[in-house]
Length: 424
Image 1 (cartoon, one colour):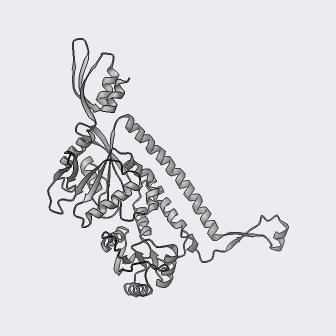
Image 2 (tube, rainbow, N blue to C red):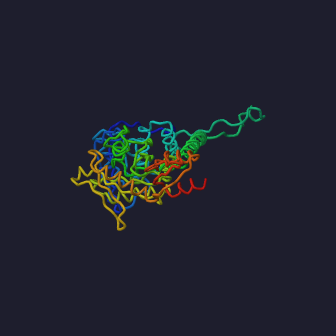
């Protein structure tokens, strides 16, 4: 859109930067990201430089090594497993004569390919524009000023009109205008989601959100629980657009469960901001099901990464239920782990085979029904509206009517809903 850069093909060379403070940073994850973007990795270079070089991120010798390998493999795209500054991208492309992309740019490309709904496309475009805004300074080689002046002043005849805006300023103005319009549209989406959440709260419908590291099996578990048909694939960010379905839970009744975008190490802040309207579903839920890949080698660090993102979006206060998925891969058994108070805290399941999903639904019922009370209510014949509301909430366990027309009901209901009905 704004850049004059070398053309990029599908053959890509990966540059992995070893991070001493993180075991999760692996070449395998960078490889999966590249493949998820539809690229063909043809080679890789590893650098263990302690501090990034301010001009090229890696040292001069490593740049020469990357150049030699890219020429040998005919790779026209170089992807670094870190975020690059605009000047680093410019210097690297000048030295390598190849298109250079950082980690954030690669993730944005994947998101752009996967967005299907109107809302998802708006969110991705906003993130792309925010990412591009810091790189306009290097986008054009001419940056000439346009001729200024109104054409009516005396100096215009002699060519003395003032200098107009630069091409860079024009591009920045167009980008800012487009960003403003996207934010306005997303504000409408945010209001609509807020209205839907208020409607669910008024009807006392509990909400559950699936969260977790990308490719942990959230969509497969979602399909298993709700008999849905959300796309599920063994690749990073296979599901981008959020999906909501109803789920019948014992005792609690109907709940709404949502499948959200997966998280990843160093999830770009621009994406978190752009998807904030969607991620608010997680923030306002009654329970977060934190799906974990039980077969992942760095499982604990992935859990920490997800919790960091949940804290960033303001969802750290929402109760969590850990669900360790893929027990069929790591040859484990479906089971329930409980805390010192006897509450379920971790469920071991296989979304692929269905093992343990019954235990998961029972655990959800236990956690969501903690504020439920069992009591008996007697209604007069003219209080049919209250009776209808109790049935709508799925709170009625047993009902009898005596000779006087009085209705005796055994109910299981949330304490707050009971108080609300009694106050009317």
